[in-house]
Image (cartoon, rainbow, N blue to C red; front, side, top):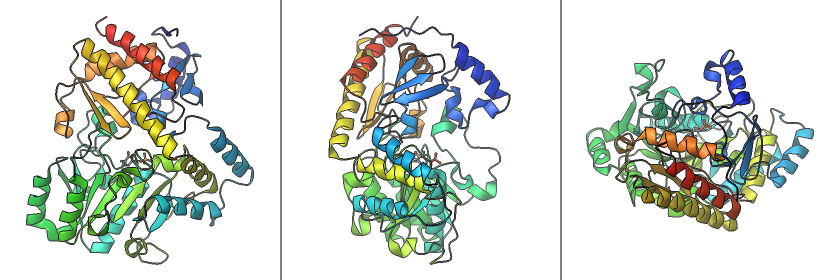
Length: 439
Ligand SMILES: *Cc1c(COP(=O)(O)O)cnc(C)c1O
């Protein structure tokens, strides 16, 4: 194979970025896209097909961003394109019920039976916001426990030590979030059960819910220690609190039942509320909150907890999500697992050969590489990584036609369309990028 060696200059992307900055803050609609974590100019993309994306300078890259998770089947998957095209011609939104919502909700519940009822929204942010509101309503309590480095969207109450984009930009918290809106949010270190037990011993009767990612994947990939989520559930339940499992990233990405599908806690060990997003919209704006019927039925119109959305569950997004999930079968997950192993271990081998300290970490097929000597188990450890080496590695990969997430704090995403040729391309690029790290 011939490895591309693209010049550092990006005339068309640079022109678009300069123009965008005149009308959009930072030129971007979501901050990590701006390349602040790695420097340089973000690439402007025009099309994608399978594992590949093409930019305005007519360069092509193997895509390991996958729109941050949704493109699990690859770009422009023919079945998704066909179904969406058909639906768009029949109208994209009624502001009234349509059959696709029920079909998608049934598909989700068949994979995650603890999600007895499902309500659709348009973003993961909304889904978690709704889950928190429900947990407070169901318990009559105010406090929410979250973990440092876990991201649950950008709603005010949850924007404290939130990993992901905030970590990339080195922002501890966000101005504009009032002390009042975060006063009921308690932040603990991830994977620290002792801290959770201690907190509950003191204030358990005031806590509405523990909120945690299925596996933390917004500070780089940091899997929960064995039994961590289950213990959270038990601690919460023994104090009359709930567990909200945020599967916006892991849901239907790491297995056919999301992270819950890998552990299948039931009864009192089960999460009470789950949130989904990314994959369930198949690249369209769709997310969901699901959970026990007794809790979910508190939502209006059955109950008093208000929640709504003009485009919520619109038939285009629901169709894309349904067709995407229908294609997420065991064959796909086996493929994703093998592909993630091949790329992760292959890149790691190049770094090891060059004597570069790093930690390759997996949560099923989600993975990332920390440029740090030791394994990372929480956010404090994640933030000791060498982000400058990551930035140079990132640009080396880009030069050789591989698009990685532009931040050391993000997971890498593979898809059903990443085959042998793409794996070989990524590993050849990694060999070159590692050898050029000191250039
Ligand atoms: C991406 C993400 C969110 C936010 O979803 P958006 O659709 O970007 O609002 C929430 N929680 C987790 C775990 C996520 O990965």
